[in-house]
Image 1: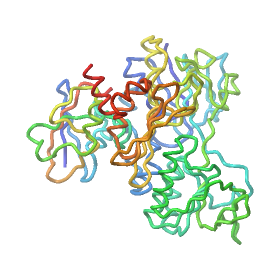
Image 2: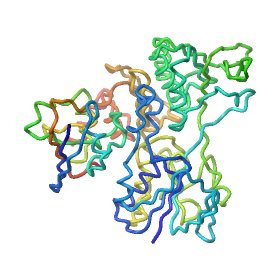
Image 3: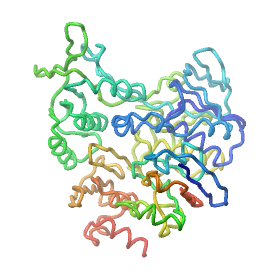
Image 4: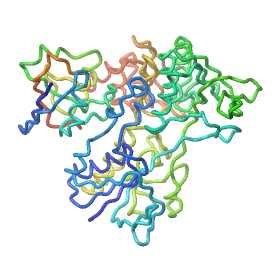
Length: 106
Length: 404
């Protein structure tokens, strides 16, 4: 399965992701700039903020409990499609997912 | 400045190198550390890693990051001396590396109480990936784990072991759990939670020695009052000591850590220190040393801004901590030491303890309440009266601040 990350400056990076892996880990392990994941996915920071592409928003689903509280502290604008990428786990129906990255995480 | 050397390849050292590049430093960066492999995250070792054993998921950045960022990483290499007059560090192999600026991110090591039997094979400790791997392998065949120390690490391990159906006894010398970090109210709440998990908790229980079986392997713990707790795994989780030796031998000022100023510079302006090893001017006015990811990464960013951008703003980040114990996420914003007033509010996930000192919000402890925790981080320092106006509802108080 793969995901495409599109940075704020338009740079696209396509990475392979295994089922069950979080989008945050996929970005970090593949050295994608624009996702930090400072707390390692412990829901302690908002440095893995991402925007789910509009076409994928329904498939990915809404924010989970507590996510909006952390996103209140995000460095970039929070939109309806904002998610913490550590809380999105890869699954077959997300194969080909497009994720947009915010301008800043800090 | 041409060349910056970082001693220590933990999360703080890694962040230091990354932040120097983010701030635009174009000179050489060399990281030297005695652990093998790429820098990795320690917090999950006692939590998620113990459950899933996925070591690859701990790596902070892949090797390509160091290559493309021009960061030289010398792992499994111990620095034995800092030659300040020559501005060089000397490795165990005798290699000398020159620096224009040196950052000490040497962290801390586990404290091993000097009691008889502590060196018996079979006593475990938990700080590195190697430690965690060893414990994880043994856990499958462990029937009864005895944990010496009722702090974060000991209790995170206890919860993991209980989830794996291992019998667990926690032996704590203080009259309450996590006494160094928490209010009595929150300590009491977590004592109840660990009882509910089926953990035996012995408070006011001083470990006097590690028991050994006929083969000389650790077989339990002897208490100072004569009681003996048998167990086939003994985890020593009695806190840490900062790794100050290199700094102290080089003549830098040390006092329970390497003493730094508000810019996180040591007594030698060509050397900075960060993270677990650094004693810095704390938010309450007194010098403080914090063992946390937050301090490590915020220190690193602060040093990078000073070295590269010339930023002279004193360090003032709000400390925060977390500990996942079973299904319960304990979160702390601020520092509660010396608080003179506590207010406990009931939240859906458990109590929220608001700690005040001299009429201002000093720290907030919560359980499974990330929204309250995030609000608290923005409100530390706020006058009690202002919070009282919101009936101590921190989320409401934050929203009011934003609106105003």
